Image 1 (cartoon, rainbow, N blue to C red):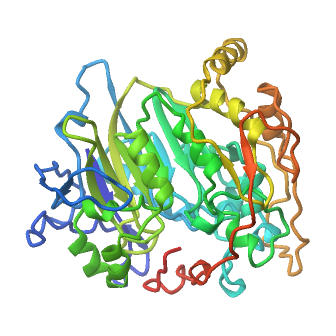
Image 2 (image 1 turned 180 degrees about the vertical axis):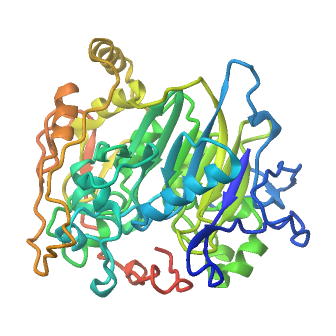
Length: 488
């Protein structure tokens, strides 16, 4: 089942926020459904033979704005329908999103088990973190994450998020492998897989920029005008790790849309809403190549994205008899926008908790010796590596300790609105105890404050430096100018 809603402000209600689900439009673009939270079965879609750049399967069109197949319902009475809320770009508006979820629960008589966020989360703890967010200074605001970091508020739902291109990059780098950004709020890492109950959730932070794709993770705070952007660019190293995931994932998140995804949904409707996408859509350059590669390889039942500030559903059939991926991009948290969706996924009954994933820990351990940390481009062979020995080693460690994640630890003072800091200290690299404990558990060295790691067990070769940032990498303040969204 799929519940879709936006948050609206009404002058008649004295400016109070209320749930106003957006009326959704049927497959032909004319029939209008009643404006309430409702369910829409996915119709049989026609196929076209043209293949887009990036994705390579037949194209089912047209598609409705909400989707769920009857087979998504629990097929066995022992299975429970886990309700997962999916949010697009958070932009630090945790209070508003959590409030919307609670109102939705009350209105529909449901209980949401988990919130996942597809990037631009903005885990800003204090004024120093704010200087590390790629937003023009005059548009920087603290928003509400600091309340949850400080303990003033507690997240009412377990929350898992990935990074986008507007993040407190210094803080997320502390948690490169994943970890608790605040109590009950878990960062999936620059790339990662975790389990929530028996549901496997994977994700990749950042957006794709080819000129940085083969570089190492060389950026460290304090950031300059170039590194504050390049720090969130997807790296081949992280994609290659995800390409080694063999066991089925239930959900995958990316901030970028997969390249070519617009060929699988209602392009005409998208261009009516976002006409400035026309050139990229026609040239098949809208989206990230790395996300498309992962979609073709992983084939998860659900894939969620954000970034482009609009709602866009699509269905990908992987081959004639292959699995189906249901894709959905969501908007940012603003009045009347489609920023939140609730889906049902069959699962074992709760209680649920976020836990480490055995296969992902083995992949992390196998690849850590080749962690590229310099600006020089490096190429890691795309050949498939055998991780079975690492997996057996990890399994023995998990049997001894359990799969529980390490506890949250504050590493910076939280924002105090009664004592604002107008000249905050410059952010510097910090070792997070969670990350140290995680690496000690896997018996791996700490490399996040190093720019010259020693040794590499996987073939790595360096080449000449890639070109500098291009004009497309310059950011527009689309948080403020709603409809001036550029590709970032």
